[in-house]
Image (cartoon, rainbow, N blue to C red; front, side):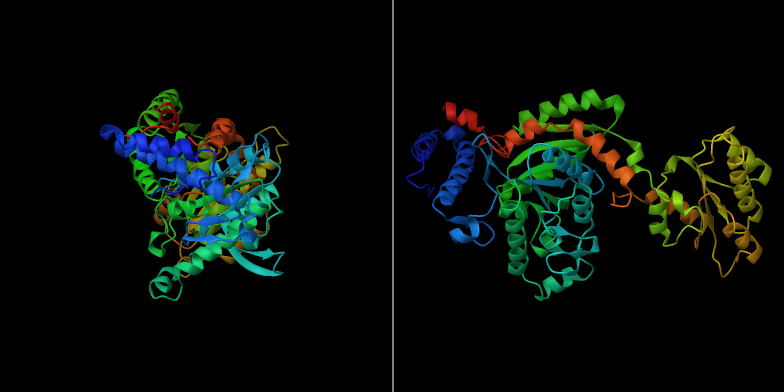
Length: 486
């Protein structure tokens, strides 16, 4: 039942190994799993040599003309096969995009052309496709990665084949969108990206099972394009490993190799402990390496005023030039005191503090602007005021006087915005918001890349994604090296 082309150099070795292992009841199941993984890889290589590539998404063989230009199994300088790399997380908000940015940055230092694709996306932006000559919708992370790294050898039209906006799921269940059309779009896009690239990085959406409702979850797509998986989880030991295990099982179900794991947002006081024990746990249970252990960088989780404009769907009244200034949610101050006490706080608290007041506090608004102007005129005798003010209240119920608005708009003042909600609602929205990387906030993007990249073991990653021993490894299974020794 295990079909290996007889001309393949490892066919005889693998078939004899499998035959021997079937006689060993104690190791029967685990050994067959490892052996079949090896067979699948070499079977595919032989098919490519013969000009025929097997598509796991359709169950059919593609002709040589469609597969010959693909770089999905590109041969590296040392003669090894470089497989695509697929990044997925264990849940939302664990730093998957930050890890993807760091991986693209590191791969660009090691390969001539790095391709990027987000097979299935959700939040989208409108961009101009040079190839089509028209505007199209792509996942926002595609725009971020392509523009930040100048990946202009691939067109937007091929980087975001499936977008799942509101209402998409219902259309799929109603039969208006088919599984075949989705997979054809993904296959076409991946082939075009890989044909123009030396290595391809695929970024998933959320955890491994996201997309299952429309039959294109991350594990299934990774299997279809022949990619190895990199799983990203938040710091910790027990909870992190539990979440990883849930995602590993689905990867195993679709025969997706796990190249390694990146643990993110690790507490500084727990860093060495987390790194040491997670490395042991992954190798002992899965035979999979810890590719990276990244310490927490709170700045990356601090919203900028640009983010708050999106949260409240308003623009800054003044101070727009500071919209990419970041503020810690731990330093939010709700002003309920007198003007005198507020001014004392302005001069004693950290300069970059986010203040919130009610729209009826004309005195606080004017005092805030006056203090900003005073600091500006100090000619460096005092540090500049980097605070921002959010004024809350419903305009129809608590209108700001025309005189106050004229004074605010006439000043080159500190950042200030008026939002139509209560102070409590404003604070809740800010605290529950998780900032996302975007192409406009270049400082945060650069910081993310500079912070993450040094902590990722690229040598280990490339070794895993070009070798036969990059199996997901059943917890009770054996590695390819052990299989060879048998």
